[in-house]
Structures are given as C-alpha cells and as structure tokens.
Length: 69
Image 1 (cartoon, helix red, strand yellow):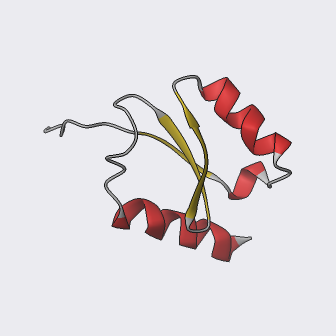
Image 2: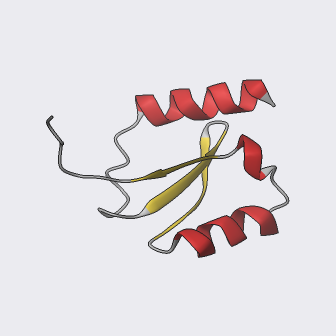
C-alpha cells in the first residue's frame, strides 16, 4: 500500500491539474485521478464505490492561485 501512496504523491507533484476547476477535490490512486468534484463527501463515495482502499488514496483540493506566507 505504501507504494501506491508514493506513486499518488509523485503524480500530484508532477501535474498541474489544469483540467480541473479551482476548488475541486481530486482523489489520486497510483498515477490516476479516480474521482473528482466540488463535494468532498461525493468524491469519497466515488472512491469507495470503486472498491479502492481509501487509506491509499491521496485527496487534495485544486487551487489555481498561489499562496504566499
């Protein structure tokens, strides 16, 4: 399972997710976005429906603007 999480995180780092809207949640498993949407609960339900291990899925929110501290 750790390998799937590492691949998911690497996929997250390597991609801009410009095909997804600002504020949209993406669920990444391995090198694939397996679910996405504006409602986190529905995204998690989609992941569960696909019988994927939720603990191995990376969930992140797409943000189009940069934040600076």
